[in-house]
Amino acid sequence: MDIKVKSHLKPCAAVSIAIMIVALVMTLTGHGMNLGVDFTGGTIMTYNMGEQFETADVEKVLADNGISDAQIAKTGENDTQVQIRISDKENTDDLRTALENTLGEKYTGMEYVDISRVGAIAGRDLINNAIKSVSLAAVLMLLYIAVRFDFYSGLAAIIGLLHDVAIMLSAVVLLHSFIRVETTFIAALLTIVGYSINNTIIIFDRIRENSHKSTLRQLDRESIVNLSVQESLSRTLNTTITTLLTIVTLYIMGVDSIKQFALPLIIGIVAGTYSANLINGYVWAALMDKRDASKRAKAKPAKSEDQPSGLAINANLRLSPNHEGERGLRHASIDTEKSGKEAGSAGACLAWIARQAA
Image: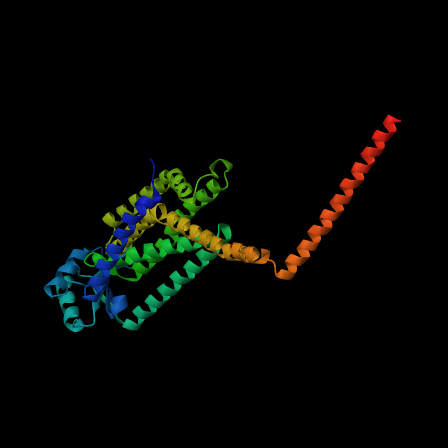
């Protein structure tokens, strides 16, 4: 399969830019990310049900009380506890009474455990820590790839990494009805940072190998990238597909908190795979070509300064009257010396003829 990196770059970049623009417009119009209690602040209520229970029973009580965006999770030993997260706008006293009266009839061992409040400042701390973590990871990856390969490989890898993160965040906005941003989303984001760079390193390692092969030195960088992607594509796709099978299974079979982790992870893995194969290599080739062009541009002025121009040479060849007089004297001296040599040669010839006659 012949993959032309440059021909695939434009459509891939167009798709990515379109996704980001739509997500930005939705965010500006008030339809951004669906932030959970950890980021917006709210109340966490915990009950011990005393036995195995169905989350659907809890959801029904909440729905009857007009609460549709609550987060329900099973916790505790043997999943016998329920943790309910609701926003600050809800009346916790009325909700507590409804839960205990309704669920207490079915789960007779139900006991109230705890109620706590989460402030929005905790969400800001989570966001700041996530930004710091991603930034630190990007810097460390840049240093590692710059040492292992070259600086421009590291720069291309970081550009691809930022692309993957931006696509993941944009998808969360587009799918805000399915994805709720919780602490699990931060874990998924950091996982994508590490996973997407893995595919990029595989491609760059093959590019380096092919660049040093004597049989491929006549190829330009774009052709080397094309060849490297072709050689690594089956390995990359096999790894990605097996990983996606596992995560998709988690999303289908898992509870809500697992789904909130798995879906962003699926999106990030897909974005990282296509960017590593169809974008990052060309970005590296473009950066290297730009570097070479810059070096050639700097070398030309230095060369022209060392060699005088044709006009300067012609000007130096023009002689002043004094120079012309000196040149005439030199020519006269040369002509005199030449005449003397010719006269001496003629005399020697006549002497030889006289000796032969005698």
